[in-house]
Length: 485
Image 1 (cartoon, rainbow, N blue to C red):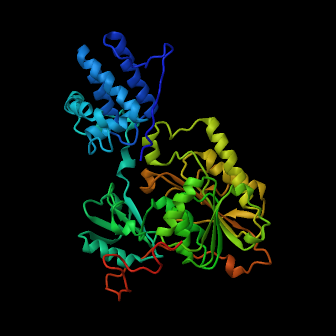
Image 2: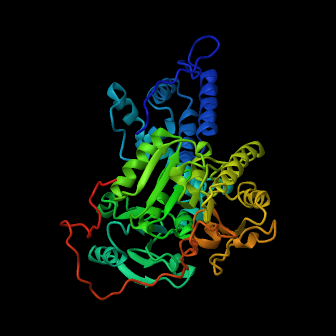
Image 3: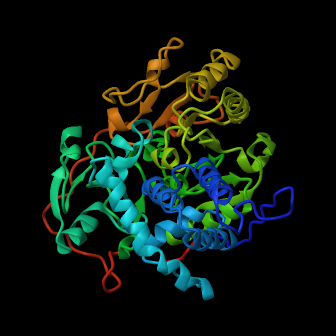
C-alpha cells in the first residue's frame, strides 16, 4: 500500500507554489508543477502515466478561471493525500476508481473523470495511435521487455511438475510439452504453456499472464521467478545435505530454490542487512515450505570465514546489490535505470568486489555462483576478473551450459564461460552469472562431496497419470507442512 503522507512544498512567500488563484501566473505554476511531476515520477509504475499526465496538461491549458480554480484544488488534493499524484490519476482513469477514502474530496475528483478521459482519447487521436503505450517516446517504450514470457517455477518442496501440469490442464490450459526453441516461447498465446527446455521445474506461459491470485501461487506451490533468476541456484547445484551460504539473500526466491534443490536436507545460512526485507523473506520461505534455512540480519562482509558454524560450507551463492540495469520493470519505473552513472557504478562495483573476495576466503568452499541483474561490465566481468587475479591458481571459471546463446564479454581469457541474459537473446530479464570453482580440493574435503552434478536439459513430465499422494482439497499434493519454516 502507498504510505499516505502530506507533502508540504512551500514557496519563499510561504504559499503553496501551485497557487490558489487564476490567470497566467497560476497556470504557469501549474504547468511547472506538472513538469516537476513528470521529472520526479518518470513513467511511474504503469506506462499509462505519461499520457495521463498529458491529459492533465490539456486540462490545465483551459482559459476558464473558474475551471482553473477547481484544477488547482484538485492538484492540492493530489499532493495532500498521495506522494505520487499520478498514481491517483491512474486509478481514476484506468484503474478501479479512487478507493480507500477520499472523504469530501471524492466528489470533486470524480467530477473531472469524464474530462480527463476525453483528453486522453483526444491525445491518442492527435497522435494517430490506439494504445496508451504508443504515446511514449521511442526511447521510453518497453518494447521487447513487455513481451517476455511468464516463467513459473514449480516448488518441488510441495509438489512436482507432473501434478502442476495436470492442475493447469484441468483449468482449461493447453499443455504443449517441452519447448524445443526460443521460437516456441515467442509464439505462446492464449492459454497455452510449455515446459522450459533447460530447467526441469520451470513452466512457461504467454507474456503478461497474471498468476498472482492463483491458488497454487498463494499456497506456495508455484514461485513466480524469471528464468534468468533461476540460473544461479541451478548452476550452484548443491546436493542434499550440503551447507550453503546465500550471502545477500532477500527477497528469497533464490533461497527457496536452493532449499528445493537440497530437498530441505542440509543447511542454508542466509544473510541480509535489511530487517524489513528479511521479514518478508521469512514469510515467503514459510509459504514455500522451507525448513533448512537460518536467517541472519547481518552484513555478509562481517561474517568470519573461520567461524566454526561455517566450516562445512562448500557452496556460496553471491547475488549482491547491483544497479538493476537488466530488470525490465525497473527500467519502466525509473527512466535511465539502464544507464547508471559512473559514480554509482564504481561504488557498486567496489562493494561487489569486496563481497566476492570475502566469499572466496571460506576455507571449505568448492563452488561459488556470482550473479547480478545488471548489464554493466563494471559489475560483471570486471568484478570476476578482479577476484580471479586476487586468487591466482586457486579458483577458475567453470565452463557451464555450452549451448547457452549469450556469453560473457571477452574482456579477459575465459570470460566466455560466464553467462549473460537479455530480452533479445534469451527472452528473459537482463542477467549475468559466473560459476567459480576451486582448482584443487583441500585434503579435508572429500572429492565426491565437492563435485557438482552434471546439468542436462529437462525432460517433459510424463502425460501418463501417476498415483497421487494425499492432498488437501483443491490444491496439489504437498511434501511439506504448510507454513513450516
